[in-house]
Image 1 (cartoon, each protein chain N blue to C red):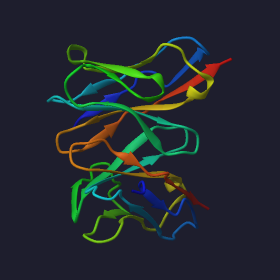
Image 2 (image 1 turned 180 degrees about the vertical axis):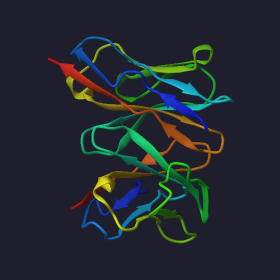
Image 3 (image 1 turned 45 degrees about the vertical axis):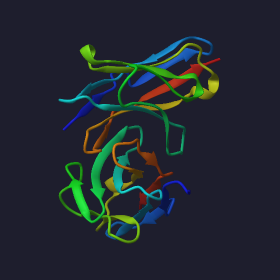
Length: 112
Length: 112
């Protein structure tokens, strides 16, 4: 089955600084890729997704992610972080049969 | 179109009792996923179901846990003879074929 690795358990950045959250996947075919965000005590909200086409995808809240097949990566980026971005971020990979697997998550703390 | 509905939001059970968690997928969604999130941990895949079929249950504990998604009605995650270690947030997600999953708000199970 497919799998996802998020190497960073916890990241702290200053408000206004840029952000990159790493995601590496393992899957034998072209995957569907997703980033979700979870605020404390809440469910998961989809930030963006990649199915095919342009490898740089734009999402909500100013986030973007780039699919790099050669590196099996789908890193999430934001040029300037806001305090409200503090949350848990999950990368997910979906197989063609819709079977989705999530990474362990990266907790983002934003310093004032 | 209501989102994915999970109930109850909070469930308290004594050790040895049964817990039933319900998930009503979004209208038109035929795929349901259950995930468990332990405190301070990421999402762990449990089971992936389509109507009346279990597609992948590789993440389900071998004993006490079962899931179903009947032709009519919600998907049910059932935990028999609960133990303290079952205390967690259980999230359900649904999706149409080959598209992203939408998550419910989760059920927080506490075993006392």
